[in-house]
Length: 270
Image (tube, helix red, strand yellow):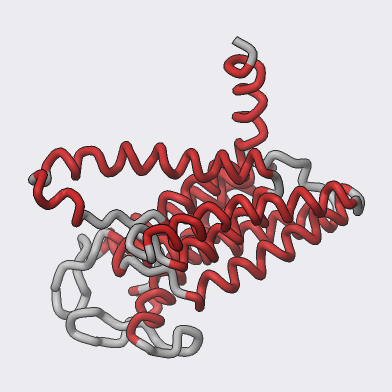
């Protein structure tokens, strides 16, 4: 049953990955992303249902438009597969027992958040911006997540304070960097994304872990680019930090508790 559920979520993720791509493209071009019809980027031909089957349509045409034969971006199947895997892995490795209304509701909120974060990931990778049209809904989902978590665990001042401090850490670090650099190092979108990180982690340690993981991933991702770039141009390099924060948040939500426990047991008391 669990395997079937994971497969079912994988298929849903494929479809929502395709939706995230279309949403981002339409937002950027100012089109109606809710009612607008998908079209080829090259020939502008309106796509039929047979052209919109996630992954399958791209593979069946060998990555080309069915109408103008121009090559289509590999971002289509990669994003669809990425969201599909993110949905399935979220189910398989979900840290809590998926029973009861609030627990299932939190899981659904998380899946919706994954779609929104995919949109932010694509936006920042392509255009180096985290648009408010997506960051604000993610913060809203984070608030719902926090409320559901508090209802599940039972209201306490300590739990509420934990969320407040997590938001302060998640957003505060980026606010300080933004103010100190006058916006040269990071954009204000990272500050708002930090609010969402605090809401989804709910603790100072997990908020710190998310930022640490993102920074570590950033070093790994940027090192080859830095080495290939001339020294005189290295300071001008721009590397989007939003996608790294999103990957780190995904890891933290699923495995943060295990990582922190491992660190305390094996590293902290050496």
